[in-house]
Length: 443
Image (cartoon, rainbow, N blue to C red; front, side):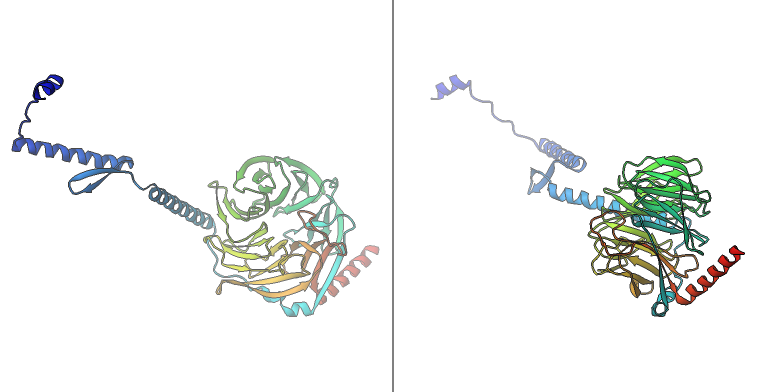
């Protein structure tokens, strides 16, 4: 057997040479350097690990779920940091936050209800959708689904029709602070700029591919902001009557817009979010997870607070520096959609409209950080728009048989028109002034 094995496998193997102490030292040194390089590879590439058990080293794969969760946590932290930084930049832009609000809610308490008088100006055509009052408080403007725009003299309460305004349904109006320009938007997918003195069309601004649902002028009267069902916000130069740029952020129909100052404005949409925009930095912040349905209306209270009304029937009060609402009124109108909101700027008072049979008046308490009821006025129909003159002497409503944005359901027995809600004493004084002015005109 020994000869056979030697013939098959060759001669006897050479005996192994015994290692000296220096050789042993060298081999351990090599092993150490090799293991250190492996550890460096593991640290740098994060794909191969070394697990030490006694003196042996075993290759192991790192836990992938841990690395994924760590990366997600880092991303969330980075997002929250950027959002807080953006909110701080937007809130600090040109305005310092106000800590107090004017106490105006007492003007519309139960004593106001006891002396209440309501005057209705009927609308024979399709219902009113929008209503605004100029800064002087002398004129008001209404838009309707029939496409007609009316200018109202608030002293005589007579109306005049804008020439060439028989077009598609109008959903929104905006007037410049100087009172010279009136902007209208709706189902025509374009924005019409009107001269309020001549009551004639100046220019049509085209760019939206969907229904124009909201408009707002800047304080300087040079910029117009528009939002649309095409999910976009567009900025227009009114002096040049030209398009400037498009902002994207909403993932569904944009329904409402309100301007603050210095290129800062807010929008709300069908995606259940409100978004605060800053055109100086081309950035925006989303306020979400507070409503379960579309947010139809949003308004600034001051340079720090805003109020939003939703189709889920809730009204929320927000601070632009916080991710969660300060207060939420659930079922503000008995579960009906909140169709409209109007703010008296820098005050503790705001109004909300729906189709539950009441105009509701609310008070904001900064000390308690909540919204409380002041009073309610019985009004039947859809309250599509609310306006208050600068002296806060009365309330104007655009009341309709159907919602501003659609015809999902109708209230056929309702009297559509323009409602004036004021104290009886003031109404008598105005009637006396009207009779004197008419007698003087006859002479």
